[in-house]
Image 1 (spheres, rainbow over the protein chains, first blue to last red):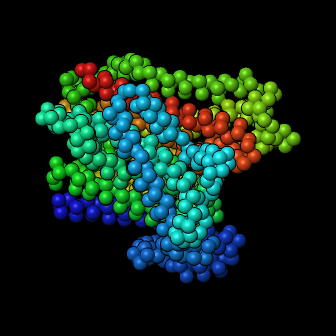
Image 2 (cartoon, chains in turn blue, brown):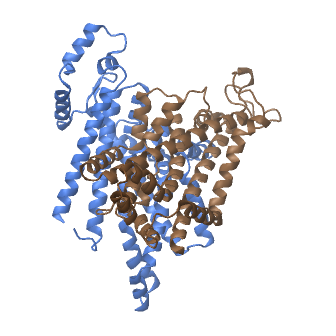
Image 3 (cartoon, each protein chain N blue to C red):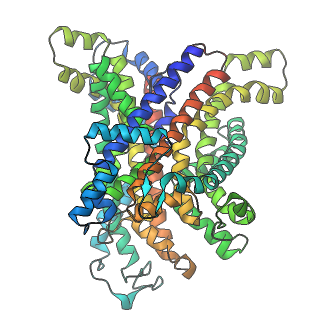
Length: 314
Length: 321
């Protein structure tokens, strides 16, 4: 087990290293060069040369890469000349708010999807299973932003129940002071995940229910509820744990769209605004951070799988 | 785009498992009886037959054919001007002159829906196919080459996989200015990883089969092994995956349009129409929002249906033996 953990961790480090190389290459592939990108196309040659010297862009490429890695190791993600702040600073300001949004959406998705999946597995091929299957198919095919717009149309414009935009604020506390504004963004982000998770939960549950140990339990007289929750559910949750870890990139992507739709002041909105203003140091820095999030998510999924399933031995 | 990647669901990277291994076991059962490269024709015919027994598949196919007719034949029956902006004509509700009203620039919405359908379907198909072809070759080559080459090629895939699709998509479209071929390339670039992993998984088992070994012994080239033996035998997995890739590409294109990183308005797409429609929800111009959205959802549902049904029909084909 320990050996597996070390090997798996080493793999993650290698992948992370390749990602940094990729980011570095992308940064050097930018239209023009970093100096032109930062100072603008009309910058004087002297200014460009000064910028290159200041940032070490006149050094050999391998040395620049070393400096880049060194900076990353010290938490320096780059500097945004457009916002006049370091990327790490911008990120730190917005990160807690995004974690709040993503965390709540994850929680809601899991709380709703697991019972839905169980229901569908138990009522397999009955009318309610078909209805839910159809609904999750359609939901799964929805553009996330349109779903958000429809939520706004129904609950904000027609019914006036909830505000159409997310709470604005620089801290998590300020956002939490207006919980009503959080409802639509969280629901929007959770809905598409619910469609996928409940489908997966359904098939995991159906798989479990077909196992021999379920028949054994039934034969020795275990009650219906106990079979469902003690035997089948616990074993179906193992693949779910993996799926939740693997869905990190999709949820992060969904968060970007959701933050744009509801003007939620998180990392995703910062990312889109930076794309609009072609602020590449922010884009690359945030992509790298997102990649770290995904790598950690995969690591947790794999380790979780190994820990949760006692049948697996390494 | 809060869509967990479908390949991830189909074949989660459990420790000690190669992607697509579940398929492999089933496939091994299917192919071992002959021990010979199965003629592709009969396999295809059986697959097609089981495909058409599946109601979901037929529904998906019918929806898709109708959408294609609507987009490509429709403009000949319902002729509208989609070239010149006419502000005097803007934001009219549905009427007999404009069945689905007009948009903010005075274009007929129904007519624009047809024209936009052409580019949306074309881009989705092209991006999905490019990704599938490149991913297939990449995965097969990686598996056949083996050793260090395989390890390096797959770590590269792992690394790219850890970049969230939408982040990469936004990053790439911010770097490269959007035009049609580049858009296809960018959308293809973000989605070839799934097929690469799947095909590598299949190829790893196929390359140890007797008939592939026989080709090697007989002096057949690596290229022949990849193109004549591994790709045709993995075609089922590839087709299923391609169908999902097309669905994803259409959704991704819509998301990009919404974020303002899509194609310019001179190339109308459903995603572009939908995102223009989102700006007028407070005015109540529903006809600018819902038709385009419904078209996207229908297309994506159709391809998801087809993919799902194909996967089932491949399973059925294997169970029958």
